Length: 172
Image (tube, rainbow, N blue to C red):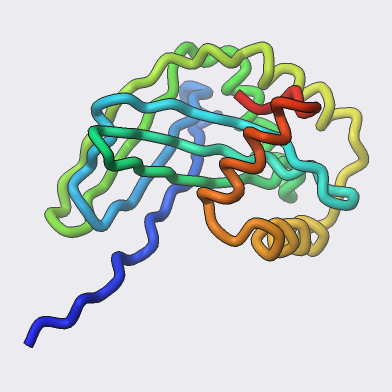
């Protein structure tokens, strides 16, 4: 008897090597073959929740009727300011490096997507540098509030895009 099991959640993160070549890249762990090679877009937005400006990143890929949407966020005010350093990297980086790891076949795939959003990252960095820092607890509370308000990555992506059409200059 075959049981239908729901697909495990997809995981994505953002990392950098600021000590070596000052580049940032996306890391995606997928429970299916990496379909990102077709049409990939990167979207970015800052969502203000209480004292926190929560940076959200989305990778969206579509092929035929299938759409893959991955999401990650970062805390610019981690103790070592690694998140802010990473955003600074994106201000001048020519392309996004996207590294996918297929957890089923244990194969890796890397693709490059042009970064055409330098001005928005510079604007976000300037805003964050002048914004009062928040605590790690406040950051986690903001993430929780966002997840309670818009419970899926799809809802957050759609609401961020709708919000940006009216007043948010940080969505791409």
